[in-house]
Figure 1 (spheres, helix red, strand yellow):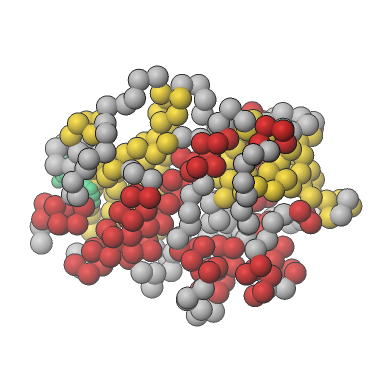
Figure 2 (cartoon, rainbow, N blue to C red; figure 1 turned 45 degrees about the horizontal axis):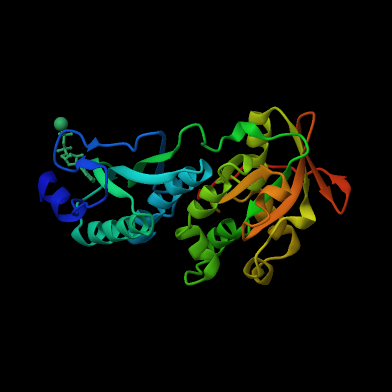
Length: 306
Ligand code: ADP
Ligand code: MG
């Protein structure tokens, strides 16, 4: 199978998405942006053995490489429109490619993102890189840098599920809600949209709540306080792990792809599935409190899969 055949067989699906003037097949894609919109460009790679175990299913890898990029688009408050794919694979295995493409297009279909181009190469390990272009109303993108002293810090959903799922995968457990939270994260696109004009700053939680919240606070030039007892943890994590593991997953586990944002509580009252976990203060750095008392929490950095 040559490269042309591979592309046309697995990746060149008819695109009816608006704005695609010329998709796969030419030297470059021709795209028509909506007038009055800013473009958001995001890119993320998944490397075999670093971001996922070598025995991951091709469908999960395909799904996940789109989902992690959609999460960055969500954190910007944008609408995803078009994507490109750079894929490195050891051999051109038809079964693997079919499954990978199915996973990739499944995630793309959920948010109507069109695959408009890419590059295919062979190499020793699987590396999948997706680049997505999104759009947001001019000047309205959600940035990390807008947090204001007195804002409340919120997080969507529950945190720590993906790191817990990865731990279960390591123990050989496969069919489980938490494992799926790792393998098939769902980007918070709808919440991201609803935060535009309401949140003062936002970031997606890819490297752990504490680490990512610190990045937001630093970008905004403010400090923050996190109330550890309010950090939302799922029943599934409570069922499988003790207090110490739960806390570690929730605070420093990555790959959840939830959103962490700052806002005045009045502005976001109507938004579902969010939890207030702290507040923005003057000064700098993040202070963690357990039931009011300051606690030191050592963040050794999330290692993804390694
Ligand atoms: P070039 O030699 O100009 O780089 P290629 O032969 O690599 O072109 O690719 C031909 C066309 O197929 C281009 O439009 C490119 O964007 C697209 N393409 C290549 N690989 C992929 C892929 N994995 N997924 C989607 N489109 C791809
Ligand atoms: Mg070319």
